[in-house]
Length: 378
Image (cartoon, rainbow, N blue to C red):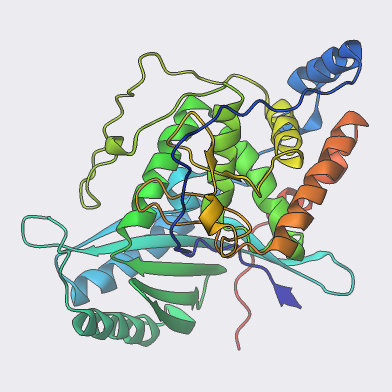
């Protein structure tokens, strides 16, 4: 049995742009306009994808997990602030993950997975940016031990990378896997910005869910994280004139519970297209997108280029973080990118042949309709 887990690791690398930017005009199809109109009408009104949505999370179970974890964290770090992060906050993706049988390729088990961001603050609630790393590691270790001693966690791991501290554990009694990220300001701000974009295009949540599951069920695409997928969706919506651009300045400090929802750029565009039509457009857009030349930057109307001096050492995909400028697509290899583009072409063909339901199978929804069983005792 193999487990699949789409994570939201921070993959950091500097992205660049040329001094002069040019407008990018996607190539127009030569297909018959009548067929295109009929396809659009069908996708806007009658596609089975329009009624698809992520299985609803059991609020009772979710609240129980959060209270258990928060109680222990606050015992170890009294002035901590805990917030949802990734799909647990912005909802563009899925709370559900699953394992598949390698022989039958059928879903074998389902569980929750989500992330929480923990910030160490002073008595006034302001984030402490100069926390001692050794002290932080000691606190994380204490939290890990208490989670085990209280019978909450099993199979936990502490993952420490440059400026990244994580505690990942599996819940002992509930089918759930949780990632605790410490002082992950940039990741939280990305989650807040993604959430604001879902308000310009509510169907972005369902698009994220469908493509999230597509990635999960195709191992060759696992190098795409949730953050990189969300940025690709936002970029597609911007470049096809469906939504406007939100400035990172809308996001306040990590410990601030309020989000400034005013939008610069006078009258925001809001997309009302159907889920199916947007999923089709997304696949068509990236099936023809030139990743070798352009960088994904959701903070600019124009497309950015890789610089000529960076051609020899650049990554296969450039997805610029709106806050750090680092590359969220650093982990995506050329092989994975090629598989992604090929998959987009296959999805376009599936839509045009009326087989989009086969391209986005509903197995996970059907399986998740069953009550999540208690974890087997080991």
